[in-house]
Length: 111
Image (cartoon, rainbow, N blue to C red; front, side, top):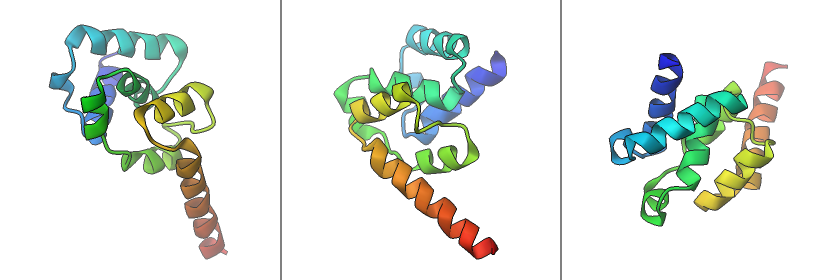
């Protein structure tokens, strides 16, 4: 569980949200829910971010999401993840399209 917590907090940081700015009981709640539901720490951080204040969501940045999707730490086809990304104010379809294009480009260059 300690590794999950560390990765969850790192994911929040990568999204532009310092973990210390989020109430610790709320972080623990989403970390526990993420473990129970089988979500990666990155997915759990996105789900939590969707429920934070508009100010915090506005400060967040989607930059790491395509990299996480390529690595398999975020499943952009998962309905809960899509809803969270939409609720944050980002376009899950655009992120999915971007990741697919990057993957296709890598496949072509490998041939």
